[in-house]
Image (cartoon, rainbow, N blue to C red; front, side, top):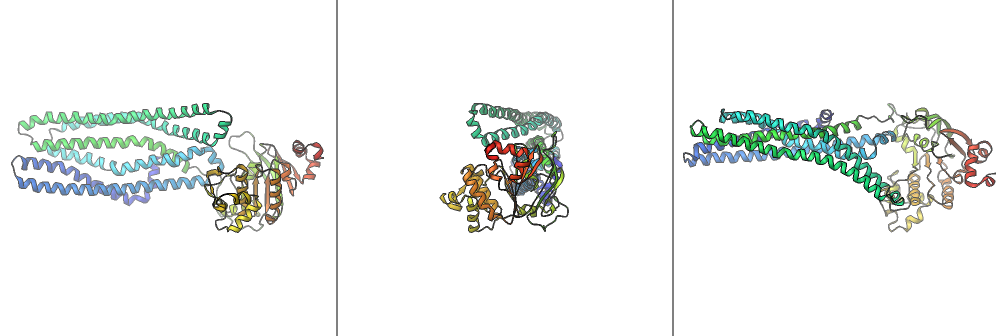
Length: 577
C-alpha cells in the first residue's frame, strides 16, 4: 500500500526527486572527501611542518565544505517542497474522495476516522517523504562510498567494520521489529480517542443534563491512557535506539584506536590515515542509523498508507452517470416508482415499494411514526443514498442519469438537523446562491419568519455565526436553514421535519408565507405535527417503510386507520371527527 501510494502521488515530482538525489550525492561525496583531506594535512603538512601545504589543502577543504553546505541546503529545500506538495496533493485527493461519498460510506468509516486519516495519517506518510529526501538518500551513498574511502586509508582496520556494521543492523532491526505492532495499534487508538472526544464535545449538553461527567471523564481517561501506553512503548523503543548506536560507535572507535595504535607504532599506518579512518567509521555507522531510522518510520507510515488507500479505493455507492442528462423538461416534477431501500447487513428493508408523484405548485406531506423511513425517503431524492430497488425521477429523468450539479441545483434541502457554517448570516444564506442580493436574502428571511431576530442582531446580515450555529437558538437555526433554501428558489423543496423547533403560531405564519413563494415549485414536507401538513395537497402515510395511505387530510381520515391514529394521538378523537 505504501509503495503504491508513493508511486502514484510522487509521480508529478519525479524530476525534482532526481534533482534531490543528485544534490544529496554531491554533498555526501563532499563530506566524505573531508577526512581524506584532513589526513593529508596531518601526514604531509603538520608532521613535516609544511605550512604552505597546510594552507593550500586547508583552502581546498574550505571550498569542499562550502560546496557540501550549499548542496545540502538546496537538497533539503527541494526535498521539503516535494514532501509538502505530496502532503497537499494527498489531502486534496482524500478530501475530494470523501466529498464524493454517499452517507453510507461516511457512516461506514465514521467522521472521527476520516478526520484522522486526512490529517494524522497523511502527516505520517509526509514525514517519511521528508526524511527520505533529507536523510535516507544520503545514507546508502555514505555507507557504500564510506567503506571504499575507509579501505583506501587502511585495509587492516576493516575488521572493525566487518563486525560493527552487522551488529548495528541486527540491534536496530530488532528494535524496529518491536516497534511495528506498537505503531499499528497507535493509529487505532488515535481513532478511538478522536471518536470519544468528538462524542463528548458534540453531546456536552446531554452529558450535563444526565450528570454523566464522571463517567465521561473515566471513558476519556481510559482511551487517553490506552493511547499513552502504546505511545510510551513505541517511544521507549525509539529512545533506546540512539544510546545503543552511540555505545556501538564508541566501542568501535576504541577498537580502531587499539588496533591502529600498534600499526602506527610499527610504521605501517600513518597518523592521518588513523584519524581519517575514525571519521569514516563514525560516518558509516551513522548512515546505518539513518537507514535504520528510516526503516523504523516505514511501519507507521505503512499503517497510515493502508488507511489512506482504503479511503481512496472505496468507491461511492452513488455513482455519477456515464452520459449525464444536463437538462430536465418537466421542471418541479418528482416521481417515485416502487422505491425500496435496504441498508447493508440489515435484516429488513427500510422502504418497500414506495410510489407517489408530485408536481410544481403542489405540496406533498410525508408523515409516519418514528422509524417509518421518512428521512431515508427524503435522502433518496438528492441521491444522498441510491435506492436499492425502484427509481426516483426528478423532472422526468431518473436521478441516477442526471448530472449531479443539475440535480442539486433543482433541489433545496432543509435537513432534519439544521446546520450553519461559521461566518455570517449572509454567507450562510448565500451558500446555495453565491450571487444573492440583500433584497433576496431579506425576502427569504421574511418568509422564514427570521427577519425580526436577524434585524435585532448587532450586525444584521453581517452578524457572526459560530460553527454549527451554536450562538443562535434551535428555532432560529432552523429558520435560517429554511431561508437558505428559499434564497436558492429551486424547483423542488425538501423540508425534512424542518418546522419542529418553531411554535405553532410561527409555524402557521411560515407555512402561509411559503405558499406564494413556492407556487412554482414542488414542496415535500416531512413532519410529525398534523397541524403542519393538514393543508397539503396530498399526504403520504408511511408505516414500517410502506405506503399505507395517500390523499388529503379529509380523505385519509375516512380511509387510513394509521393516519387516524396519528391524528387522534395529537388532537383528540373528537376534534379529528
